[in-house]
Image (cartoon, rainbow, N blue to C red; front, side, top):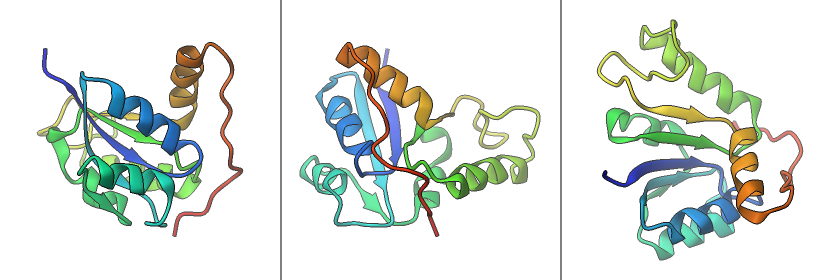
Length: 136
């Protein structure tokens, strides 16, 4: 089995510890990290690992079938809405996990699922450290 190819949207208080775990997993390849603030610790961590960073998450989404899982840890409603709209515009309104007709496997993972997985790994409840975020 090949490594899971991951894109992370959000590199702040929730994204940074998630990225640390992803970079420590030999079965994960992080393809890119996006955040509006390119000075955040998660962005610095990605750069240390020679992973592309951007302030435009749609650049990473446009990688299409190269990505297995897009993890949204922004806490921003606008990001979720843009991801959903991209799927609708790609003519795949019948399922929320397909990005386009050529890509039937990329999954968009919500922040709550990421927090669950991080909590299971830590053996205790891990909570988001941010409130509702705006992503312009």
